[in-house]
Amino acid sequence: MVSALTLGQLLRRTPQPAPQHKLPEGCHQLFLAGQQSSGVFQVQPAGSQPFKVYCDMTAEGGWTVIQRRMDGSVDFDQLWDAYKNGFGDLRGDFWLGLEKIHHLVQEGKYSLLIELEDWEGNSQVVQFVFSLGGESTAYTLNLLGPLSGELENAIGEFRQLPFSTRDRDHDLKADTNCAKHLSGGWWFSTCGHANLNGKYFRSIPRQRHERKQGIFWKTWKGRYYPLKSTIMKIQPAALEAET
Image (tube, rainbow, N blue to C red; front, side, top):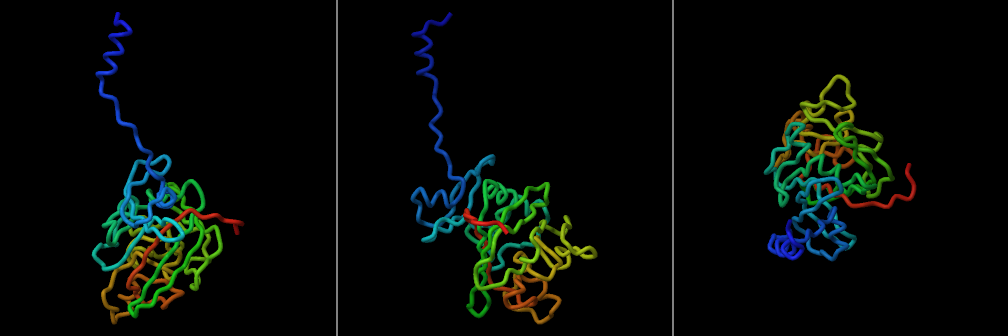
């Protein structure tokens, strides 16, 4: 039998684990803790393993960037598992991953801010409140609140949209796989409204059938204008009244 003194000595000699610092659940929590510089940080939403995100810190708070298209350096014509898990470079072009986005937003309502830029140097933003279902719902995007920004919401007439890729067809067009017909994975409705994960064109193609595969937001620049850049980022939202 080990004496109390000997047991105490043994415990003192046993290496004790260092205290664990709780990771922020997202970029806005990091902002509230005093972080003011944008960059790559590690977060850990409830029920999730830690993962890295790019935080865009603004005067209004911290935004978690979930998608960026700047230069076409990353191929977005990927299959379901890639869109689920994420791909690309957090400091460049990337898709964060549907599973990570779902973990980030599952605790409440979030604002999605979309920034768009054309090839003439013009920019537009669109913002709405949303929630995102898990994989069992095909990561269905649920629009919960009114739109803000100057643009009409190209997906606003559809309150719920599951995510589709060319190997997982969940769109609302019965006779066409929108992801295969266009390019990339997206919350497709009937193919022609929006696709911010389409092909990146460094110059606007002459052929219309090529242009329709590009990055577009129908209510700005039309259906056949491939955009120069997009950023999608999220932040917790206080929603006064659901519609």
